Each structure stands twice: as structure tokens, then as C-alpha cells.
Length: 529
Image (cartoon, rainbow, N blue to C red):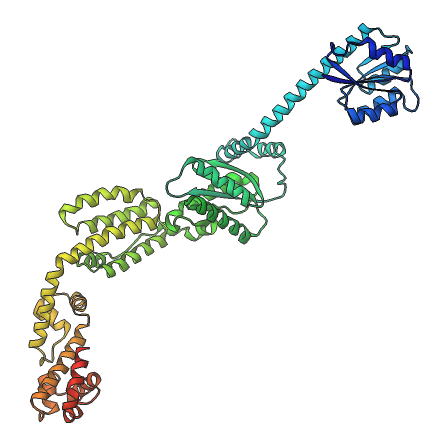
């Protein structure tokens, strides 16, 4: 029900108006009476009525003055003016101050009731209108963020949007970006994620960034526009916090591309920069912050050919030397990564090497490795491809090692037998054994010998010669040093033999023979160590 106040300085008028109107039937409640404008305004402040019926002629503050004050303070209150003067200027002045109804005294019940009902209907229309405006504003408030997102997305991806369009939307959204520069942040979620994770990234970024301008989602990416203040280190710190916060809550990593600074009207160019940055994620890996600097470092590299001698790598896998093979694979991917080739071109090199490696495996396993090739091709970072490649290569290398293990032992046993037979041969060396006796690659034979025995071939030969010399000394204490040197392959260089002997035993051969009883135990220990 609408609340009404009556204002008149005549008691009879007040009483008459109070009694002649059926307030309840009119949907009204009379909440107070006043005898002048001053009393009326205090009552209005206290009761907050919807309608005021007031006389014009009153002491202290007349009806027109009251109407002016009410219009300034409570413009929503409707005023019905009563007057005994049928003068046009009064009505004209009253209308200027929002008075909708002007009634001449004396007024009967019908006229007052009609005026009240008309004002009440008008108030209801205004209430409906205000409610409609409020609901529209509420809906607009709800939809405005989505509108901003859509506008930004269209501005970045639709070439028909230009500077005039941006000026229109800048004014519409009240974005104060005049003479200011911005940067674009493009977030890519790694591994498996749900649709709501995209919005989680957006919300976290908007909360942590001190000056987000606009934001949107483009496909599976989140894009944030931030105002650039020249403090790149500070912005990078915020980006790091966003990544850490999201990873802490959702256990999913983020790769972020950061554009160079530019005008908002250049946003489409800046967006292309971020997309180009994300391409380098293949080389820089998941969880990276990739900037235009990374792109400039890589410019011009993709025109180079990738050259890597993989023969040694293949041999290491084929012979089961996984530690050496792993180092060679690391070098391979390091060189490939430095070139920053086109992704498909880089993958083609890896696939070529992968095919060469799996051919080393058993025929029964090659089908399994071929099926894995599809998974390798689908990997989207060089680090992931490297890890995948190494796991397959290690499996093949280990199988090769196991299958050749017995064969290795036989070869090494043969080498040891040759050494025992040829201790007095001055030509005894790794090259001589490999090329003249076993017809093998010396480098390969040396690595094989060290793996099986734990020491280099040359050290083993010296150690066996010293041990043999001690054995002969024990059998014949009168044996001469030059005789030992000649028997053990040192020929005309007994001094060389004496130096080697002293290095291993701590004393010269002559000194050793003098103290032979004491040295036997020591020498045995040293020659075994």
C-alpha cells in the first residue's frame, strides 16, 4: 500500500481530507498530517511517504517551496497540490517542480480519490519501470564479463575488427588505456585436464595479477591482457605465482607465452607472438615461460641441416654399452634442440634414428617397437620424445648386453690367455692383441676388457709382469734384474722395468730381493689391488 501525508494549515481541511477519503479502498495508508512545509518535510524524512497532498498557501514554508525541496531530495515522491486560487502561474510553477496534479479547493471525495488513484497507477508504472531497469542492469552485470571475453576473442581472431571498433568498446567498457601499453599472456595447460580447469587458470590469474585489463578463453588456451608498466621482472614473478598456485591445487603444469609490449590496437599482432612462442614449447619443454626473446634467439636456425654421426651410438647400443649410449643420445637431442628446426622436420630425424635403433632388437620385438612409433610421433615436446626414445634404446641395449654377455666373457678370457702366453713379448699391447690375434677393433676390445676385469688392458699387463717377476725372484734369489727385464718384454731397457716395479711395490728389484722374506706378503697384496 502507498503511504500518504496531508499538509494544510487549516484544521477543517485536514480533518475533511482525512475523513472523506476511503484510504483502504484506494490502496493507501494515511501516515501523518502537517500544518506547514517545515513540519511536513520533517514528517517526510521520518515516514518516507509515496504521496504528499499539500496546500500552496501556508506559513513558514509554502507548498511550492516544499515541492522544490522534496523534488531535490526525494524525487520519487509524488505531490498533489491543493489551492483556492485559480491562477495559471501557480499551476505552471508547480508543474515545473514535478507536481503532477493540481486541484482547486473545495475538492470532493471523487476528485481527490481519482487524483490519488491516478498518482498510485503512475507510481506503479514507475516501480515496474525501475524494476525492469534494475533487472536489465543486473543481467547486464552478469553478462558483461562474457561480453568482454567475446569482444576480446573477436578482436584477436577476426580481421574485420579495427581501431574504430576498439575505441567503441573501450568507451563501452570504460577501459582507461589511452597512451598505455599492454602485454598478452597465453596459458596452455599440460597433460590431461577438464574444461573447468581452464576457468580455474583464468580466475587464479585475474586474482593474482595486479592490473588485468581483459581476459578470455581461446580454444583450450587462457588469454590475459595486462597493462605493461615496464617492470618485466615483477610481471614474471606474478606469472610464476600463477603457475605454482594452479599446480599446487590441481597438480597440472602450465606453459605460458608472454608477448612484447604494444598498444591495445596491436593486440592481434601480440596474440600471434604468443602463439609463435608456444611453438617453441616443443624445445623448451612443459612448464616454461616463453618470451619473444626466445623466438629471436631461434630465428634463422631452422634453415640449417642436422648432422650427427650416429654410427658410434648404434654400435654402443648394439654392443650393450648403455651408459655410453645414453650420453650419445643426450648429445644427439642437445644438438637437435639447439637448431630449433620445424617440429615435423625435427621429428623426422628422431624417427629415422628410432628405426635404426629398433632394428638392433630381436625380430620378435620389432613389431612392438613399431607400434610404439605412433606414441612417439604424438609427443609434443622434445624432452618427452627424448625420454621415450631413451627408454626404448635402453631396453634394446640391455637385451643386447645380456645376449652377448657370455660371448664377451669368452673374448676376455682369450685375451687373458694371450697375455699370459706373451708376457715376455715386447710387442704385447692392446693394438697387437686386437689386430694380430683377435682381428677386432682395439677401442672396442679395450672397453670390453675394462668392463669385464675392472681395469685397463695396459694396467693389467704391467700388474701381471710385476707379479711374474716376484714369483721368479722367490724361486731364484740370485736372478739378475736384466734377466727379469728380458724375460718380461723390456729387452734392453732394464731401467724401465725397475721403474715400473718400484711404482707397484715401493722398492727397486734389487732392494726387493734383499728383503724378500718381508716383501713377499706386501707384494702379493699390492699386485692383487
